[in-house]
Length: 133
Image (cartoon, rainbow, N blue to C red; front, side):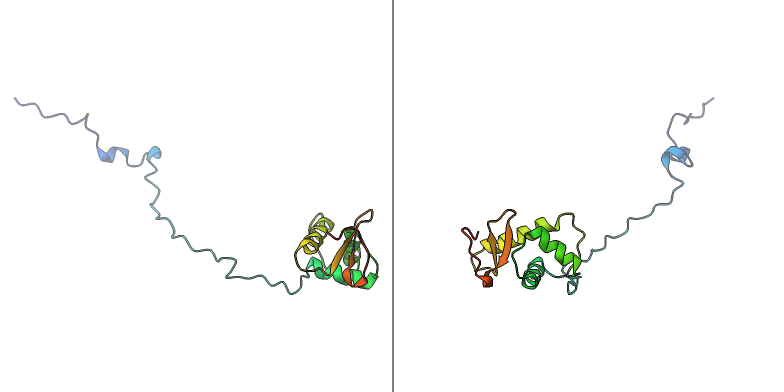
């Protein structure tokens, strides 16, 4: 008599159906197509309410009519609501902006006075300084 063939050792693809290890009970979801994020050039931020450090410094110096260190310029500007900031050291930023403006090729409206602490004045005042850079 012929013995029937034993298929028990052959892997049946249906054996794994429903196993937790296979994650087969989760439905296949194709990945979402990537959307292009708008670039910064497409959505410009409006800065009409923000004033530049140079404009603020010019207005403060013009109003006070005396040379001032960057720290005092910032204090007066904040007191008079000429601008607002969330930065931790706006006086350092102002000093950096004014130094760069003075050092560039064109004559700046500002001059740096060698005082302690370093003060800034308007060139139109004709303040004498031994080093304007």
